[in-house]
Image (cartoon, rainbow, N blue to C red; front, side, top):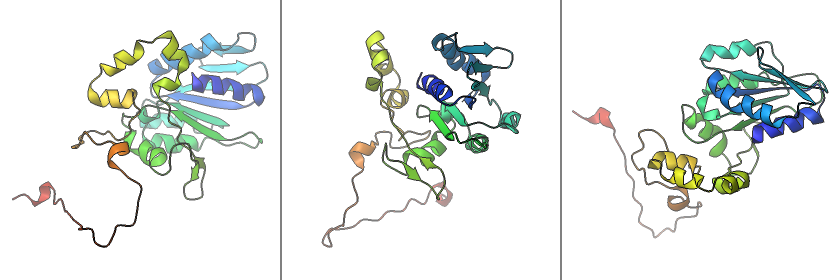
Length: 232
């Protein structure tokens, strides 16, 4: 909903702007983003072409609803230009897909050029998304990596969604009934999960502290894990 509403506001503020909203597969796209846009956007100012998956506004702005099921699907946007590219469920995409598609954010107009993504922890892209957005800076603090585009990670939990918690108060109970890994991802937005994790009890808020100068009198321990390659 956030992506769809934000896309609407951008389209109305910048006439003749162009946006691309992506899901990994077309069924996901059709059952979520397209359905939500058709339900929310006023018909007086918005029309949708189901054959091209393109929505157009009366002020000339347009939104393409796209998908990238395979690595090579990114090339269907090879000559496209967009002011904003939006990824829904970013961790479903590979890093190669993401990096290529952000190159489609370009144009000679003076509109803001943005990439906006929404996602849950987990999925094929969990590690690279965490490394790119979550680890480098505290939540809500923008940063620039290698003097390139500024990034910011804005976490959001279930209790932040007042619309959902008011209309469906039992949703939290259904999330709490999930297996631990899925519950930590979907209910608590925990990015410290990954396949094959040995210490599943690890919690950043519990087991990580701010750096400090270690007193000289403290005993220090060092360990080394040789791994399986050292077995006879």
